[in-house]
Amino acid sequence: MKHVSKQFEVLVRQDRFWGIVQSLFRREYVKKRAVNNINLTIDEGELVGYIGPNGAGKSTTIKMLSGILTPTSGEVRVNGRIPYVDRKENAKQIGVVFGQRSQLYWDLPMRDTFGLYQKMYKIEDAVFKRNVEFYTEMLEMQEFIDRPVRQLSLGQKMRAELAVALLHDPKIVYLDEPTIGLDVMAKSRIRTFIREVNKEKKTTVLLTTHDMDDIEQICNRIVLIDKGALIYDGALHDFKTNYSPGHLLSMQFEEEDVRIADERLQVVGEEGKTKHILFRQDRISVGEAVSLLTRQYK
Ligand SMILES: Nc1ncnc2c1ncn2[C@@H]1O[C@H](COP(=O)(O)OP(=O)(O)OP(=O)(O)O)[C@@H](O)[C@H]1O
Image (tube, rainbow, N blue to C red; front, top):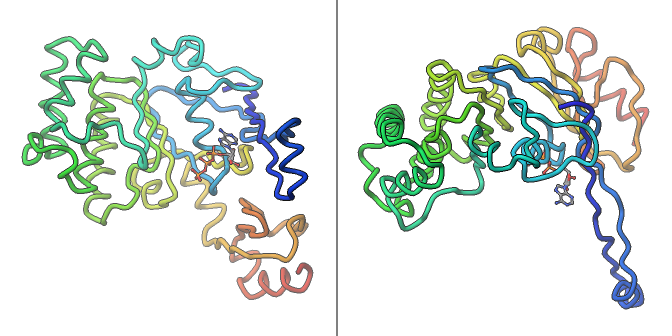
C-alpha cells in the first residue's frame, strides 16, 4: 500500500424539526477520513498483527485489500494486482474470515458447504480432496462435518470458517477477530492452526484482533494504526522492549480536544473524550502519570 487514504462521505443527521424538513431538499455531508496516508508492505509468508482501537481503520484497510472498497487516493496492490480493478482474480488469491460475520450456510453441513465452495472457486478435484482431508484433520472437524452448521458451537463454527476461507489455497488470508468470543481452549486451537497453516503452506496472514494473546502467540510483526494513521510498524519484540514494562492508561477527559504534550506519554488511541495513553514505567510511574494528567487537563 502506497500513500493510501480512504475518505467516506457521511450524511449529517438533523435532529431539529426544520433541519429535518430542510434535509429533505438539501442533504449535507461531512467527509470522514477512515484511513490516512498508509504505507505498508507485507512480504510473502509473514504473520502480521494489524491492531488499533475501535474505529481506527483496520476493517477499511482490509476491505481495500480485498477489493470491496476503492481507495480515495494512493495505490493498493496485492500480489501485483489492483484488488478493486481485478476483483475476481484477487478473490482467487485471498481468503477472508470476519469473526462477526459468517460465510457458512446455516442449514448445510460442512461437507456440502465444501462442495459449494469447490464449484465457486473452481478447485481441481485432487486439490479439493487433499485440502478437505488436511483441514478436517488439522481442525478436528470429523465429529461435526455432517451436522448442519446451525447446530455447531461457536468454536466449531470458527474452525469451519477457517477451513472454508483456506480451501482454495489462497496466498493471503485476512483474519478479522478470529478468536472473538471463544473460550481459552478454542482460542489456543485456532492460534496453533494459524501458525501451522503459515508454516506448511507459506500463507501470508494479516490478523486483526483486540486480543493481545492472539498477537503474542501468532504474529512476528505488528502494525499499529490509530485514527487512520500508521503509528508503529515493526517486530513485536522491539515494541515490547520499548514499551515494556509499560502501561496503557485509558482516561476520560471533560473535553475532546485535549492535547497531551509530555513526551513520556504517548496517545495511542482515542474514542471521543477517552484517550488511551501508553507509557514506560521506568520513565514515569503510574501515580505520576495519573497525577500529571489530572493536574494539567480536565
Ligand atoms: N461505510 C462507511 N461510511 C462511513 N464511515 C465509515 C464507513 N465504514 C467505516 N467508517 C468509519 O471509518 C472509521 C474506521 O472504521 P473501521 O471499521 O475501518 O475501523 P476498525 O479499526 O475496523 O474498528 P473496529 O475495531 O471497531 O472494527 C470509523 O470512524 C467508521 O465509523
